[in-house]
Image: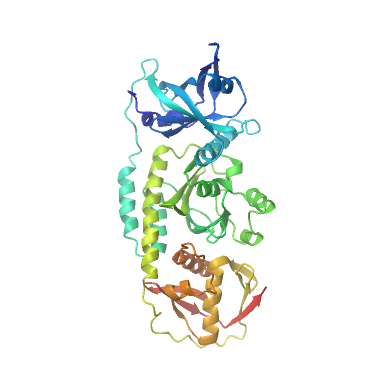
Length: 446
């Protein structure tokens, strides 16, 4: 192969539909448009299989095909000579192509017609430039120096909260991505919860997305990056999507108390999972109102940063858990003389916690807050350690590795946003302090 397939990546983004030519067993040719030519790796592409048509019949009888692709940037044209291998109708590749096809279909007004039936995998036997088009060197956005600077900043972050803020700040100032968020996995409940965001009117910290819902849920479930460069309603996060998730039993009604902060109609979206070995720790999601905003270079950059993020998350988590066994010298809580106490209600069925009848948090974070407040009201304790919380059976941390430090960040941010006189402060390695500014009355409900 004289031409590197990776140098043609902009030809494979669906900006200009590709043409595919096949032959029947008797040699009769057929030429048609194909919605998507997807780059799989250096020697393979996948074509979208949408209809039971002549192309489909031909490749099953005669596995040779030729596709004609055009660069939307400069009109350079190429022929890819292909050999059909197999069709995948589920899994990461299929879901990634399905999401991108939804954007292409919406952009072309064909949402009611396009439906991905499968991903046809082809081996690329050769590539030729058409009409004298030059073999151009691959063009970059020159993101590598910025990725390096950001990675170096991430590994220097002293806390997990600083880690997330460093990433979001770098995405905006170094890579010009102004709408971004970090979500972490709650594997026991098959959800992702938002821990940090940038570029939105409200932070949305604590809002949740079920696995499999929208581009975020699909990318996390399939452990694959997904990039959509045109508006695709079924992969956005407006009110309609949340209502749909509720109707299908994928979301708890209480989750709607913390609205998801995503753009109502994103023109471009990209979701990249944070992977560490066989684990999916979370996901970085970015979006833009502009169509065609994210290209392969942006995807490469975000995948690299997500890899660094995964190792940094695990290192900071282990560092916090390795702190001193004792929470240290206890700070005496202040004497409070409020006539009206802060009512804290916890529902035991899902550990959802309300402050003065306003929803605050649920799940593991809710169980942590309840345990801290119980110790405060019974013993006057305000200082705690990560180790004792992790070992407390009442909190119910899953047996699988679960990021306690991230739950504490989430809880601290929700308390800071909600007010009410409660605040969490990190006081050292694996240590935290509960600040209580009002008298507290605990109410437990089933």
